[in-house]
Image 1 (spheres, chains in turn yellow, brown):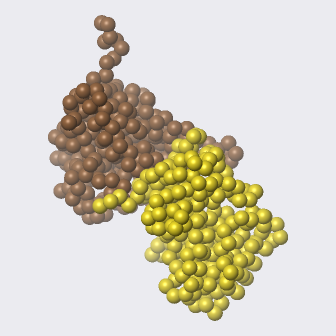
Image 2 (cartoon, rainbow over the protein chains, first blue to last red):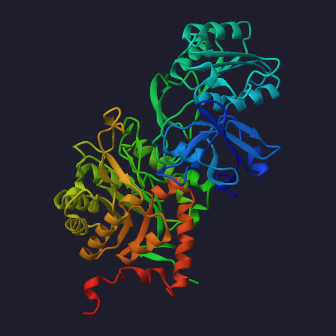
Image 3 (cartoon, each protein chain N blue to C red):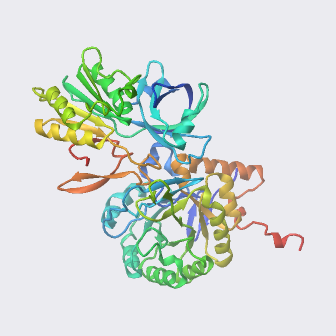
Length: 264
Length: 306
């Protein structure tokens, strides 16, 4: 059997700031590799040239199978992302992936809500794109500290969908407003699904509305990882399981989980 | 063609490279052909179900990592029913790894995992993440001898004692393991370590202490493997920061009959296969016909010009 998980060297095509905090990194991969990458999956990146010893898991932000490009959206927060920021076009990046369980969309065309903040802006962008391609009506609710931090981030609603850009600055990111927007979007759409990533408060809001309307949804979660392949059991989080709780590995059983099982 | 095979007591391995316990999972079959490994060592199990430690369970450090996983386990029943049959179909000898709170419990668990498909038992008498302020059986010779001698009576399988580097008397502990009936010693587990975040003043791990692994520990563990190999007649299996075939050769020259690779696999999932291939290259380049000829061939300084 051919190996399904590969360590490979990708060429860096572009690596630029998209706004005051976020940067976008484009790498080139074989088209058939890119064609197999699904929204919600991640790559484990070797951030060489610095003190970063472990790989950094990074969810895919743009999947372009036609061009053979995968993009990541990141913010420099430590030694690993600092090394990533130093990569130049033409440089090389050692990657392992794609890894992890991807999002699943409703089978029938329906209302799809993507609710994102921080890392979630990257993680949910390819899901919104795929949902539009499959004929879902996509509503994007994007939350950030400042509205300018959403500048240059992938257009998630599409021309026929809605985009709500919320910020802490004007208070629009407040959970009551998020819940109001969620209610307004899913009411009357029994097949709707909510996808959330990037904040515990947003996860709680999504869980509350999903439960209120009896609809489904998924969350992509983060946890410090070492191996990314389910070997080390570093990246566990607790999940609801048969009336009790059970640890599951974010890298292997996730990073995408049913929102009903996730603990905010 | 180099003969890469080595012997660990009664077991014959096709090559000296195997995973360190807790750094392997069946899904590596998606990365390379598992049958190419010298042996397969399972993640440590306990008798009952254990959840493991709170998160964060990993903290990065220069040239290595700290972990405080805390031996999460699905218990011995799940291991015997689900895990063993999967590996029994594969070519490499499958080594169970067990941990328990008392010598009697070690013996009982050793008997329970002595089932067809298990080729040897590694006694994890060294995990520093258990309670008791990080102390473990293998910190001193007497508890080590006690565990091994009870296990010896409980199973006819080969027993490997996985020692802790968190002791000042590792050679004595290795001798005690041999006296108790161990067929090999694995040198060693992780070094008890800490990492504090200066901003939050808290541990970077969910526990105050964790185990350090990776290239940072290699020179220390190499020294310990050497001291153990000088002290015992049973095989020593080296385990500590091995990232390359050159690292593996160092351990074999120091007296190890085989090596375990752990942290390297987290960074490069195919690390063990690359090490096997590069060992072959090293032997060819250095006119070594059998990799086993490297074992203990370190030339100590005092022997020079004597």
